[in-house]
Length: 366
Image (cartoon, rainbow, N blue to C red; front, side, top):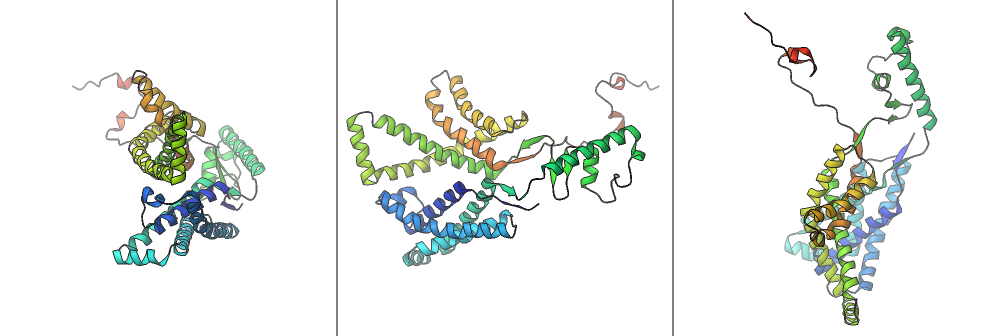
């Protein structure tokens, strides 16, 4: 069975938008949102966004399909592909004055490293968000292997190892057969392995911080929505809103709010996501829906603990925390549940059960 990274249009769109925004930031000689959008209309921003985004997508999407043909799926390869796409899109869209200014200020190396690092991150996120797909379904092979393992285990329990034929016994150096012989949770077919044991969500630092960033964007969206709804409730507010849109002041305000939201979410949502993840992990909860629901309910519960008035403060984090929990679950993935910790034994007499009579009796000496 051949496995390849899946083709996901939404992930391509997000990656291209990220490349376009970064290229605009380089053109504007700043990475601050208020500097990027100051004095630029929405139409101008869209035009400047399209060219670098198209260049990046041409390289990244083309490379993606080329990698699928040769069955390369390593995250490192996609990170390199993302870095190449970012470098090319930035180099083509940025004018010569940008590089001359960077060389004059002595920050050209920082610009190169930053471009490569962000491109690599975009490539890595694409693989993690798109997932994998295979060119064939091994359902019948899995079912046959499962039935065969069950028969082997029943024979071994009834007749002992002597009841197994030579082909059924684990061979020297075997790995898959050894596991599937004793535990039917790991099933091996000719091409792959399938696991049916207990799972838990991975604890991932990278997914944690990316989830906090996503929460920052959600917080900006929610704050902007609330501001527009309540700010345009009267004719004067509507007039003021249209003036902000036409002058570009709205974009600057949103950009500044995004920076503030990301900083706040990195400080508040990061520990909240980690704590909720550990709680759900201890309760053996792994599904996406539960992570999102717990993320939405947690701020409400915290607000109620603050005597209802706390909802006025915590409602700002209902959507951001729900989004952050969903993003974390999506990026973190699953792993087999942890095994019990190894123990150190200094006195082998202590290796008895908790209800063993020896734990209630004392040996008499003398």
